[in-house]
Amino acid sequence: MMKTILKQLSLKQFALGMLTKWHCAIPKGTTTQYVLITVLQITSFLLQTPIAKADSPLTSTDLASAYQDLMVIDTIQEKQPLQGEALRFLLSNAPLDEKAAVINKLGWNIDGQNNGYIFLQALAKKKGVAVNNLVLTDLTPKDKFVLGYLLAMDDYFNLSPLDTNSNNNLFSTTPLDLLSQAAFAMPEDFTVHFIKSLVEAQLYFDVSWCAIYLTPQSVLRIFPTETRNLRPSAVSKTMEYINLYQDNCY
Image 1 (cartoon, rainbow, N blue to C red):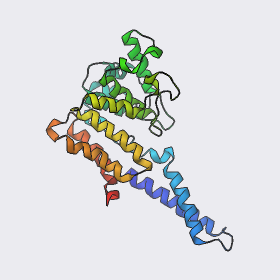
Image 2 (image 1 turned 90 degrees about the vertical axis):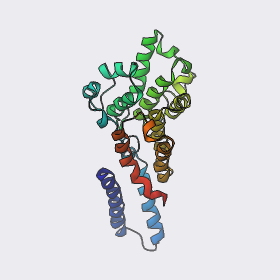
Image 3 (image 1 turned 45 degrees about the vertical axis):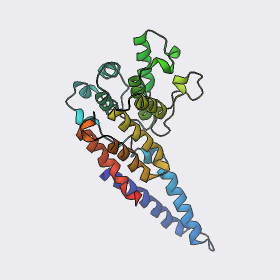
Image 4 (image 1 turned 60 degrees about the vertical axis):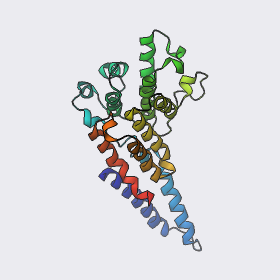
């Protein structure tokens, strides 16, 4: 919470600082309205940069701390490529909430990362086929969930597919589409729907901060507490951040 407030304050302070500096350099006759519009445009640009989005629904929500008892969590070094025990865990039959915690712990990188493709390569090897020969129908709904969440964390700024120009529908499918297909196939799996809502909320970052709050909140309404397969502390920790956007709905 404090990180969010500080980031918002720093952006405002930057804009005010720019306004103060420009005040001395503004040509006579320039209207105050013009200056304010210019400052607002710069502030808007800053809010759309990767640095601003580093504090966002995907990057600021913490699931992993609720799963510290899992041995695999301790093996993960944040911002390091998917490998070793974590990769084997994501390929296993482990529960999806635990896989979500692993992906969350793997984290994100402002310069981008490639964990989705690493997972796909390992999945292809497990199936005994070349990775480029894998197609969307080769993936189970659980595979789609893992890949979708990994890709979303890999490119949280654009939420891009592996290859936009690929003729292979697996490589050209977006993270949200993968998660939507997983959610459709698993209508009663809270973890899948909740993670999907966070990816949707990420898309709303530049559009509607109210929607960032409402999207995960709507999933909580659909799934009573006793039906959720994600640990309560993981949900509450995540909503601690999401609830910061609630005031934008009033």
